Image 1 (tube, rainbow, N blue to C red):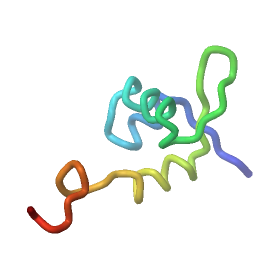
Image 2 (image 1 turned 90 degrees about the vertical axis):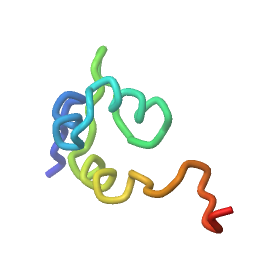
Image 3 (image 1 turned 30 degrees about the vertical axis):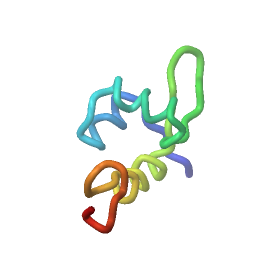
Image 4 (image 1 turned 120 degrees about the horizontal axis):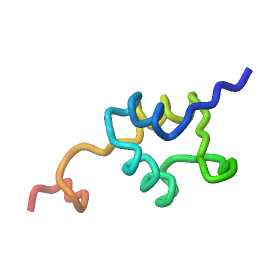
Length: 66
């Protein structure tokens, strides 16, 4: 069974604002379905992003420290 969550619920799971969730959807980093004027996200997609979506380290990905 597929569990769907709203942008507000996804924001609570991820510890961000609903505005940030909508930005992540717009940027293609989170997959969502548009239903009317709202977005719905699969809970497993939100959990995947929570585990793997955030990048750590300095911006630009400079791994050599130069």
